Image (cartoon, rainbow, N blue to C red; front, side, top):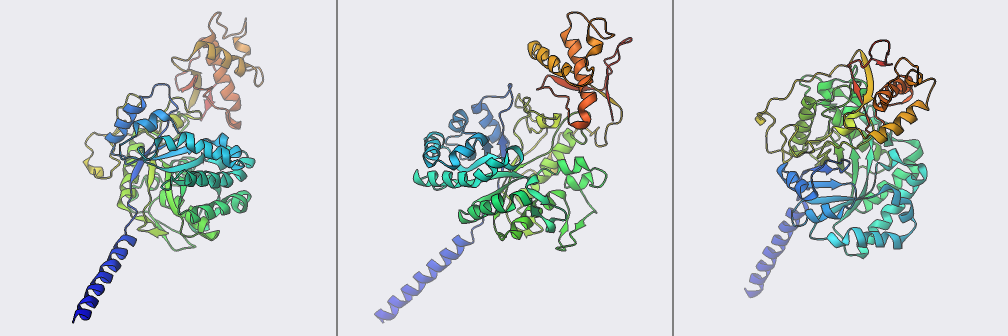
Length: 469
């Protein structure tokens, strides 16, 4: 009887252990939506104030583009999980120097861990999009070095990855035809996927439906890009999968590309997604209405844990881009208008990153969109309000040194000459330069000194050149 009783206890003990293992092994990686905290602005709140604003958005995760110690200290004891970044320009040196990698981790990660919940370390930002091919080939070796350094310092909870834009794909349409570019497939992507698979990390993807839609608004429906399509779907002829939005198509194209290289199970993390709340006159669909609609809908999708057609029910952790409108970001106007907040900390539109607020619960009405169709008419490029006068002078010299007779009318005796008015002359020069070079990539930006206008600055016999859309 004693033996039988002991056997019974052993049976129930084994049953308990088995049930515990089953319950823990089936535990899900829960979906959380975070925020990208960029710092390319000269008017942004302090790190401590920014962390309070991040909390007010109910973000559970934050990604920064460096290892800013003031930000990392402000995130201590907040329970917000943090992603940090190794700068692009350090990748090549670290790829061949374990000692340098160890030193970087000891100086930039270890001092803040574990009180700041650093959980992800991205080696560079969109390396394939923004650097030369020598850096591409150094990327995975640098990732390996950094992982070894983290292990050596006992930082076992930090996953290593790198962010990729959609331009790593050679083909993305239909999604089942997703294929990595031939120039990086074998030498960069395959070893990267091997590393991510071995370390159980993520493929960090920057996915912006705004860009494919805005480049082809005739053939891609706006409601499909905004998750608002009610009666339109797309069926992939290769896989038979049915799509109800552009975001899922983009993510699945990457999933199929990974599958094609023999890595079907690597998890995807949306490193950046969002929609611009403003932009230039020659940019379409960038407005508060569309930005609010997209961001609210993508948060709803990501927190519902619905996955994508290629991976239904799979969690897509994510970071929304971005915390602020950043006034020093280069490029077209949309680049400076992806924020959820104005630099003064006020919300551009109501948003709750926890997903607990239903879309219909937002009370404040949104301004009606005015640029969902391409602008037709003339646009001029003039000096922006508040631009630094000495910098304007240097930009004027640059614009006048380009092209053919760009600044002749503002020379002494010219129809647009105004003595002692470099701002006026610069506005003419900016418009003239842009009119000549827009078709080959020239922009109305000049390091933030210029802005577009649809109000003709011409007067009398002085006619400013314009771009006509």
